[in-house]
Length: 110
Image (cartoon, rainbow, N blue to C red; front, side):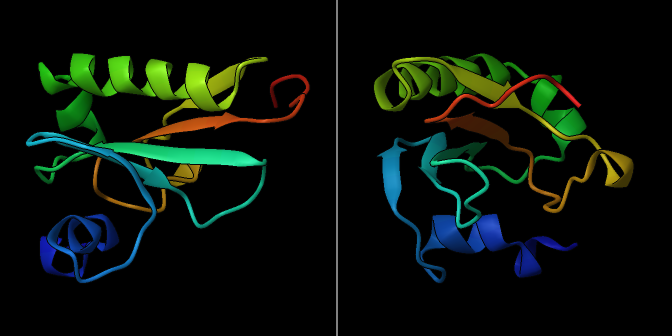
């Protein structure tokens, strides 16, 4: 997927609508449109990175710190951080991102 067709890049540049929970010069967090669990937040860098580029870059620390802070705020009884790498892991967006999932008991891992 090219940056021009990237949904997350479109959210960052304002051409796609999202409920933004946090934003600064480097990262943004917003509610995911998927509703598998009550709380689904995406935390992403504003620069278009692949998953591998994100997680091998210094920005990963800022992304994870925000994810933990938002998880504590919106899921006080516990939350899960999830990151998918590639098709077999069900990664649907090429823009590197981290999911914050919670708001319910999620059970064991698959």
